[in-house]
Each structure stands twice: as C-alpha cells, then as structure tokens.
Length: 341
Image (cartoon, rainbow, N blue to C red):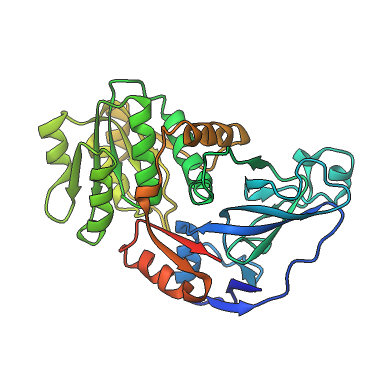
C-alpha cells in the first residue's frame, strides 16, 4: 500500500510502497478515507527542533477518519463496516496492565503517526484499547478527520473560561487558529479578531468567511493599536502561531486581568516582561491536547451543524502528491490540506 513516510532526520518525506499492517487479535484495521495535515506533521516535514526522538522510518498522520475493514478475534467495541475516527494516543492492548483491563495505566502507550505508523496511508492499524468514535450519520469522513484539531481548539476555549459577551483575539490563522475562531463564535464571544501575516492572505480570507469581526495583517497594521481602537484590549488572546515573538504581542493585546492562552508549539523560548504580567494581573495558560470527553462534544457539535469545517478545506490531495500538500502548508497557501488515499 502507499504511505507517506518520514525516513530521515532531515527535511522532507517520501511516498513509499509499504506492507499492509499485520493484524493481531486485539487490532482493528481501518481503510483511511481522509487524513488531515497537522501543523506538527509540517514541523516533522521541515525537521524543526523537538522531533529528534521519532523512531524512523515512520508513517505520518494522526488526524483521520475511515471505515473498519477487519477486526481481531478479541475486539468487541467495533465491527467491520463501522465509520470511525479515533484519538491518536492509544493504549497498546498487549502489556500486562492492558491485559487486565487497565488501559489507562498502559506501560507502552503509542502515538499514531509518531511512535507508531499513522494514518497517511491506505490503511491504518488501531488497537482495541483506542478511544474509537463511531461517526454520526450526517458527519462526513472529511469533517471527522478534523476532530483532533477541533478538540484542541475546544479544549483551549474551555480552559480560558470565556463567557458570552467577552472579546477575543486569535493570533495565527492556521488550522488551529481558524477552528478556535469557530469555537469562540459558539461560546458567545462578542468580538473576535484574527491576525496573521501577508503570507496568510488566503487563510485570513477564510477567517473572514468563518465570521471573524476583524482581520488584521500584522505586516500592515499594529495589532495592539487596532485592539485599542476596537475594544480597548481583549479579554482573551489565543496564541496559535507557534512563533515565540507572538507571546509578548499577545500580552500587550490583553486587558488587565485578562488571559493569554498558549496553543502553539514553539521551536524556542519566548521573551516577555514578567512585570507586565504581575502588575497587569494577566494570566498565561498552556492549552495542550484534550480528553476523550472533548472528542464526544466535538462530534456532537459537528453533527448539530454548529461547527462547519468544509470552508477550511482548501486542498484535497492524493498520497502520491504528498510533497505538494506539505509545501502548500509550508507556504501558508492552504488553510487545511486533506490527503485522500
């Protein structure tokens, strides 16, 4: 089968013919219908610091949806034909703790597309202990493949404790930033700014279509000045760029007593004035990942039509053209790239 594989500790990926996954009695084989390109996949493609521990070669991809085509003899939670998505962090189903039903204490947890082969392939193997979610009938494979980043955004907004009527800014119009924008709308934010660079023009256009009240090109306008003009600084600022320079910018944009929620993964340390945080009674909150309950709410919001992700999907690309998909993301010409096996 075809798969997008990271083979070397240097920039790039390869599309290879690899063996289909070997199945065990606690395994589930899924025919992938859509795989969504994540920012971390792009970091791995560019080989930015922080991924030196990857066990290469490894098939990438942890955002996906597909149909179950085979189950092991001990699998009871899904059946052949089920349309599913799943959390990418899985218990192994094989260690002593898993064998006695204590998957939460698994001694060999595996991360799809990172420590084990992922979903940028024609087929992907999951374990029976994975948190697997059957798709509501009206949720497409493409929408479901974005449950993972949607859950990241939902978790970040929930951690912020934002209430209806609060104002918010999102720094970075990448997939996480655009999804955070949608969740903020659902949460009742009264005013939302989305900021990006000139290279983000296509993504900023998508942000406008998704309901951003203010869209700012930071290379043409000063975000702090614009914040002062419109809301007198924001109640919340969500940092989703992964650029360390945006952290002090976020602190300057948030009001006294406000909160900055850090979602982006940064390649290096950020420098900011801690006195500004202390005297301004400002909070810095790290928002990472999600829990299984968040996924359930994400699917419920998709099924109810409260979250609409299709406008974000700017490119649908076959596995054989994977490099072009990654390059589109690197050049920020794509809002969201889906790989369609």
